[in-house]
Image (cartoon, rainbow, N blue to C red):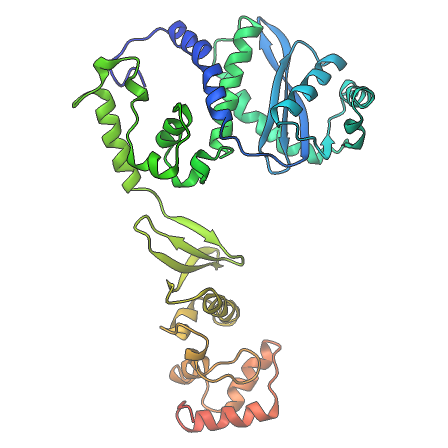
Length: 381
């Protein structure tokens, strides 16, 4: 980033910035941290410092949200006890309900000894299931991947602060903070940092309407028109107006697509002949949730029977009533019209034979109504 702006900076200068500002960043972001669940997955991973392995204790909850971390010199009982004590303090006294550990015997012993110090640890269920720890094993990648490109840590103090900064960035990426009481998805990354580093509590409206001066508070010569900060603000505004659409799923491939301009469209994603396709089900609020689910269920049955031709059957119908009368289970007038238009069905027996191939039956009363409907040219009586 500095090279793009034509500024030559030595890597040791960046290291001094990390050592100076990471502790302050952690304090600022801690004001907006969201609580984690009471199911912890604990594991340790090796970190090389001056050619020797030290161990980073980490914990995540059942949803993959980071709980806490601690860099220790070894994997002893004392190191595990120190991590558990720190994790409880970090979670504001919120005790875990279950803790899943790996095969390290020192961690199991540490929890048993903690139960003698505080009776609340005795209520914690300790598990040793390898598959439950897959989530934290995968979460280690975000930390170890950052460390792989470094020249190496020279002291435990430097390593601890640097790893804290990496953990903070990882938690921001996972959306573990609530700036202004809202969701991180509604704000850009620049707005999140502006809100977290401010000295006063901010709201979502203030973050989107008031520009921040934090980027130039220590360098007044970088502010003003034509400066680096001014160009960054213009780029941020352009990115904000060109944000990607968001999806809100309702199961079974049904979702509402929310565009950056505020439009909401019902969509149905399905797979046919190895290809992903999307069917438009109408606009919200013209099409309510109940109507969208009705069209979704009808589309799923028609997809199984007709494949990609279901769009021609549904047409512009916005509700189940607009698909025409119903004959038996899930047979509508729109499907009968389509079969007759394509000359696949001229008589009721043709449709009855087709439905028998799908494992569907039709009562005698519906057969008479179907015959009357086809005899009148698919006109409702």
